[in-house]
Image 1 (cartoon, each protein chain N blue to C red):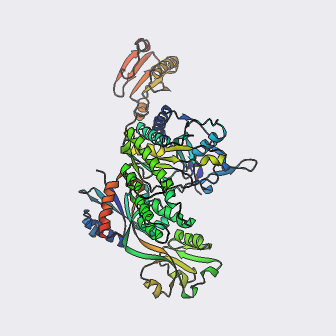
Image 2: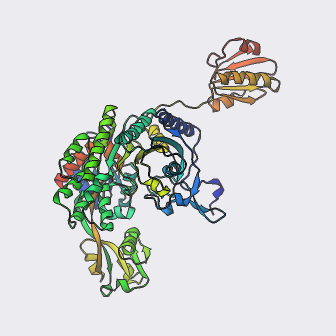
Image 3: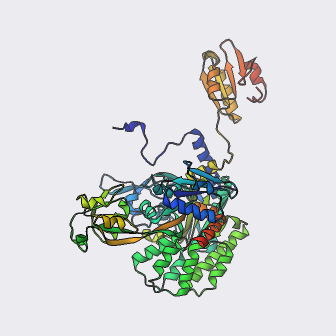
Length: 421
Length: 212
């Protein structure tokens, strides 16, 4: 039998030094933008009652890590971070009618098929939710804040694709289409499979014009001109509302000068039951999967007995970090700056020296050693070392050359810079 | 300019695909020669071509290791990955069918424990369970599927039928048709957003030459 004690389970990973440090930098870049835009952080439990997530579109029961408490109630590791925030908003915060901005950063857990689609079963997400504001301004703010966060993390080339599910809903409103067939049509549009779509549409009582629109949204992607083109068709109120919502959002994004990062794709109609308006996804080089996504989900809070409009975004921190890594974006690396090795009778001096240097922002490691340990600093690539010898001498070593001084001399200087050593 | 990588299913399909790409103006003549190389580069248009096993094409494209793939719908259905299927190419037209001995015709629903031999367990399971509401036992095979009903390994098979010649020679017949199978031009979801223009240009050319 395979020895399990030396492995991690499928779908979870260790994150070691450099990678972990990089991930924290990305997290703080993103969270700083969120906070600067008024989205303050909340933390929710790692596990909740399964009922919180039960019946949600896109979160199937078999994707949840479920277990029982002692009373036999079903618990689950959180498969998503938005739903608990909706629960909080509906149950704990005073609904005074004013917009509420919330951010989060944490791990979610889903039983993903690891061999398919490179998804981990534990993944870090950070995101924002703007509640109680049904306006296009709110939709735009979420996308703009997401763009700002990606830019702050150092990403330069990326595309945010924006859709609006109500446009498609509007098109289908009058047509009575059986559920199974509808699912197939949605699949075809999502896969941009124009051929399959036309084969399905043949048997459907839908006007030639609507079929033409469906074909167009399946393939077309573009800017404001695409919206004007679609507006020329005879549309019902729902579809028209979707277009004007998109147009407003696009206009606001233009005012920020961010239009080069966005394009419109009305064929993006996933999770139709969950989303109720704008949806979007972000893409970049280096990872084959979206790095962020979000949209408007006004119906979710109903599950918790409230009616609160909501729009939000989530950034996959791991995917963002790995695309930055792939695109070779520079970041401040972690390293040990100084080693202080000391003889036992010089511990006190060593501690003072180390804390002084740390106070100045250096990373200092300490080691009790009777003799200068050059092998260690070579192995760990530490650029400089201070050896406090038993006889009172102090050896300063820069990796190649040594210089001798005394402890008194060393601390006499106003600033102690290892670089000067 | 970045390279755009195209994954081709080794075999008959890749020969047809290479032919189209040459006509579309890409420089991949080298691939028509007898060679064991698996990766080819068109430095002029910045394209790379890789030859992979058919069932691996969706994997390469899904992960973004290839931006574009040419692969049969059968493989796409079986692999069930999240890709854009932008074009249906009018070569490689076949049908996915349930086949068996002629006396099985019309009797499928009346067999309690039906055993289905196939290379396509997912397609078979979905057809019987979702569309027909019938629970089945899958027997996964890798080749010579037609043999299974003849030696009593299974009641029926699910396989691709092109001319029906192999079936006929082995005394089998098509019992039910599941769906049409043709070659597809698939694209990674991220590549479609990041390299839309170049991919669309290529698509238009391919469409002119062969498309439907």
